[in-house]
Amino acid sequence: MKALGKYIIFMGKLFRNREPLKVYLSRMMDECIMVGNNSIMIVSIIAFFVGAVIVLQMDNALDSPFIPISIIGFAEREMVVLEFAPTVTAIILAGKVGSNIASELGTMRISEQIDALEVMGINSASYLVLPKIVAGIIMFPPLVIYSAFLSILGGYVLVMLTGLMSVADYFYGLRMEFDPFTVPFALIKAIVFGFIVTSISAFKGFYTKGGALEVGQSSTSAFNSSSILILVADLLLAKLLL
Amino acid sequence: MIQIENISKSFGDKDVLKNVSAKFEKGKTNMIIGASGTGKSVLLKCIVGLIQPDEGKVLFDGRDFYESNIDTQKQIRREVGMLFQGGALFDSKTVEENVRFPLDMLTNMSASEKKERVFFCLKRVGLENAADRKPAEISGGMQKRVGIARAIVMNSQYLFCDEPNSGLDPQTSLMIDNLIQEITHEYNLTTIVVSHDMNSVMEIGEYIMYIHQGHKVWEGNNKEILDAKSPELQEFLFANNLVRKFKEEKSR
Image (cartoon, rainbow over all chains, first blue to last red; front, side):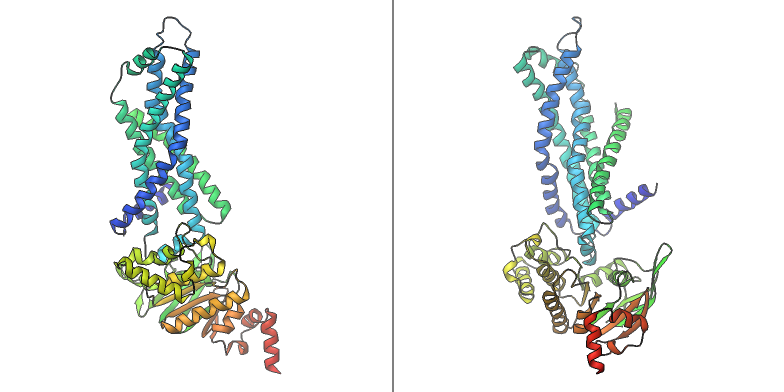
């Protein structure tokens, strides 16, 4: 409860005595590159292979001749759009982006760089953290769309290379009983997860005390807390919106 | 001038500072000295507003920092420059960007004005040729000099230095000490230096306050300190062989 109270006060700090808007705009561009651009490679590799593996596993699991083979495409789409792309990508980003944020701010704290900002009369929390949170909220949705696209592409490439099923069946399955709301639902999840990953990691890093060991601990703690909160939020959003 | 009145600070059950009062005059190198863990860095952080004291006042030329509204506090902070123990330079920025940072954030100066001011300050600390280097590419002494340049770039009225000699060799320490004193006199700053380095104290201490277990035990200057009667201060001073020998020779 104490940590929750501290987190809420920390969030409040971001919006009190802010710096001029132009300061945030240039920093936000840098943070968008850090969150988005620098995560493309890892998201691409994982999304592509997971998409391919889902098709392979589904093919192994479906033995009954009464189930149409195109159901594999359907399952791929449902799993990827509803769960894998938003949730698993967010957990991957909690590991990459979140731990990066926590260790960056933790190092700034222990090397007195945050104190230096405070002495200058700059709201350090707002200056350092707000652009990261905004960048997370902006960049997570396109990364989720990209991740979903690459997963489906991974499945398509596997179908092409192995001949498990025809490409036509795969695409028929992908389009089968499509509920358009799943896409905005995935994007809503991406926005919420973007906020969770960046704000929790920044909170953990900003209040680091001690030395190099504690910076590492903050980074690990940021990943653990973000991952758990992502799963809790995933459950709540599914219950509320679906 | 900076005046502190009855500053007290506790962390949990531990009283770190107890009713500390002092006047730090303009144009002088004021020093807060004491053994490790006696509360001198906490006192400095209370003065600059990084730690709020439990009791007491901090007056910047009559302006009570903790009683002021947020705008006055911001204004006071814009008149403050601080050199941190480790330099506290921003790793991702070059030396020039580090020194320019307060100007970028807090002023509406044009790019050419900022460049002129930054290079003036870098030249003052002898680092105009290191402008394009990152903090990790320069030595500890150079980082301290960049920290001083950043501290004075806003035409600060108050300069705070937390252990400016830590981790430096004696020659570089002397250079940093002299630079701090020269800048203090040149710009008529109110400078407060926290240190436990007796060489610095003897070299630049125009006003010295000795803190022992959170209390102010003695105050004076570098000419008076060797004759101080306080047993705690004597114990602190004469733990240093050079100071002990100097005192013995002076007595003879």
